[in-house]
Image (tube, rainbow, N blue to C red; front, side):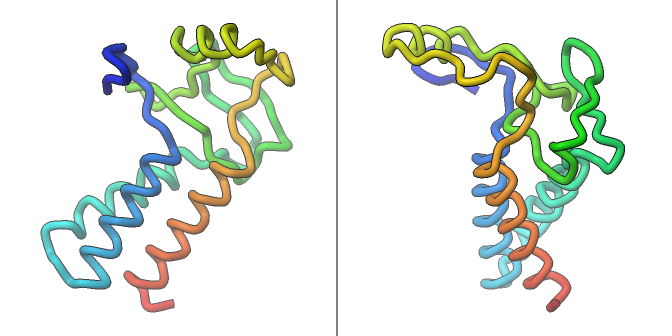
Length: 132
């Protein structure tokens, strides 16, 4: 994926679930068959990425125990489906230019926005696919 000419190997949960919502709507609400496999795959991927009840977050630097993140969804992940702890250099540059300091120096694999959007997508998907 390229942003402003820079290459990133990270997948964004927010972009993924918004794309999944579109694929679900086209495939299951408008019954366009070509979109259903994409919606299905994204739902499977998001459930796979959800932080499990053991609280272990798999990152590029190793596994971390983060019990407060159980049920959350990582903000992003790399090609190996591992959470990337280091922000891309262009994020760091923008933060530096704006004088924005990190609010917390620890490992933050998820946040409320990401988790709520992922849950909204999965709820929408479940309602249309399983009629529940």
